[in-house]
Length: 266
Image (cartoon, rainbow, N blue to C red):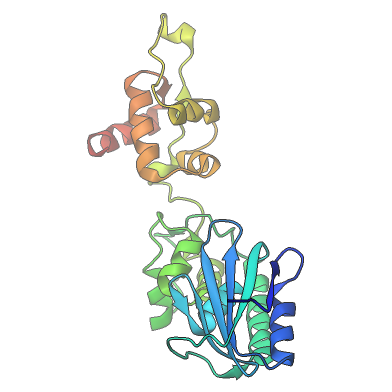
């Protein structure tokens, strides 16, 4: 089997490749392989029109929107290969224009939201709560302090709609990137000094736990520390318990009472 077109995305971007296939009224499959571990994707053309797109678990316009952002990887065009199904039937340049318009709108929204990897929390106590629509509730229900913005968008299924709603909720004070005052994530751990302990302490067995020790500065709360280390809440809680039991960390009086309440559940 011969390929009419192949190359590197860093040298020849997807919009240019799509334009070339459209202008040439080509039929076949454009196979795209990611350069950063995201797997592969495919675009199918019929006489220059885009008839199907698949990227990960998505197909159709959603798949195309995800794929068009790829800047690293390789591509190859397989002439006359037919798709198993058709999810689109639009001129590729029209889909490109619509997609870029959505991405531009999303970029404008993103400028006013925290980064995608930040977890969001519901603000429990506010003054006069604004009216919330059914669609708002669908997004708000996904905010639980454990999901990042990216994960919320993924669960919702439409990134633009999800971020539009998140921005609305964020501006109205219903959600925040900061944990509530009563949440364990607001506890601030303090390192115990060797002088304070008057003796040797066992070193934590995990590399991750040692990294946690180096990150504790007596000012950052647990959610800040989790973000810096980019670890899961379960891993953080396990390490916190370990450091507390080995007397590497302590808390001020108020936080200590809260931690004692939390400890049996860790």
